[in-house]
Structure formats: C-alpha cells, structure tokens
Image (cartoon, rainbow, N blue to C red; front, top):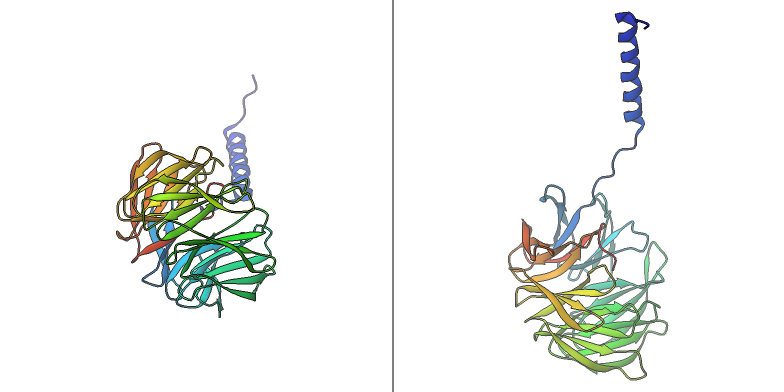
Length: 333
C-alpha cells in the first residue's frame, strides 16, 4: 500500500475545499419566496407579508381606498386599484417595490384583464359605470364608458374574452356587457346585494355571492336567455370567491357568518366549511391548495386557514379594513 506524506494529504484536502467553494459560489442562489399582499382599504396602504416568518415586513402607501388588485398578464406587475384616489399603483409582485402610478383612472373599485390580454376593465362602484381600457402591455387607454345600474361591484370575464359579467350591489342585478362592442347584452335580477362573480371553466354557469343574504345564486348563461337555476345556502354575507385550484371546487367567504364554504361546481352544493373569525373577505389559495389566506375585515388581520385541519392556524396583524389579498405563488384560478 502506497503511503502519502502529510504535506501531500494536506495539499489534496485544500484543493478539494477550493473546488467545493467554487461550486457553491457558482450555484444559483435560491429565489426568494414572493410576499403576500394585503390591501388596507381605510389606511390607503398595502401590507407586505413574509410567508416564511409570517410577519409584516413593510407597508406601501397607495391612493385612497385601495380595494382590489390584479396581476398584469405578463406577471411583471401587481396593480392596486385605488377607488377614491382615481389611480392605479403598480407593484413588483416579487420584490414589493413600487414601479409606477397611473393617474386619471376614474373610481377603479374592481378590475380585471381579459384572458386575451387586450382589455383592462374597471368597475366604478360609486359612479355607476364600467370602463373599458385598451391594454398594449404598458399603458391603459380609455375606449368606452358604459353606464350601468346602481353600484357596479365585482366582475367576471368568460374564457373567450367576449363577455364581462358585472354585479350591481344596490339594484340587485347581474349585467352582461359585450366586450367587443361595449354594449349591454342583458340584465337580470338577483338576490339581495350581489357581490363577487365567478364563472365555471366551461363558461356555462355564473356564481354570484349574495352579501345581503345567505346564499350563492347560480345562473345558466349558456342559452339565448340567462336564467337563475339555483341558490346554494352557504352562510350570511356570502361575498367573495376564489378557485380551489382543482378546476372542480370554489371557495366563498361568508362575511357575516364568519366562515368559508367550499362549493362543488358540478353538483352546485356545499361540500365543506371552515370557521374564520373577524369577517372573512377576499381570499388567496396557496400553490399546493392546502391553505387559504383570507383578510379578516373587521379584525385587522390576515388569517391562514388549513383546509386539512379545517381551522385557522395563524393570524398576522395588518391595517384597518383589510380587503384584497394576492400572492404570486397561488393555486390555479
């Protein structure tokens, strides 16, 4: 057996250490986990939550009364709609840095992009109109302002980018607008105080949360004439929706009942429920589908619901009247 001198052994070990150090230096650094954003509507700012430490790391000033937010089609910007500020605040969804502010967007309470990425549509909640902006990937250009019934609230756009469905919370209606022509196609009465709207993947049915009642109303929009086909009892104050991520189920927050219901979209029935204190409002679902991040509107907290344990497992203090919730790492819509 060949015996090496201590000096040669030390030199060899030193070489290995250098090689290991070089490989570590050359290895790409792990990408930081994107934050969770929570709008504080009565403080005109956004809480930035670290999903690893579950702490609020910063607050970003916005315009007055930010209510909803939406990701640009290229996923480079998260847009905060500042209803009373008449502005849109663009944030980097990965770093939470402010990118820019777009002014002159009148009363953007709710907003959505069409799936074909050609239109940005906003609902002017206090001014009773829906605005259509051409979107070139950089700047919104106002094309049409469509007068609606009283208090347009939430919107849903079909998968073909042909129709936007808008709830009218104070005239109890669902309004369908043709996107290409910006003309109202039809309007239909709903239950009391309709809020969020969600369409099934096949575009045949639309779910509407009845915040003034205790149910989700389902409309068949597949035929020439739309019609109400069912009311699913979920809980008082049925308000906001978020897809569970499996293409089959839908969550609805029951703001007055302090609960979240899970709906099977095929059977149109509640299949599960989760208690959430403090007036649960807008929701986000983790990428693996296990956790629901929900703004507890009256408790000034972000609540984290474990859908397997069926309970709130964490709460993070945020600002006054937390509303919209968003993160880049979410379950499929």
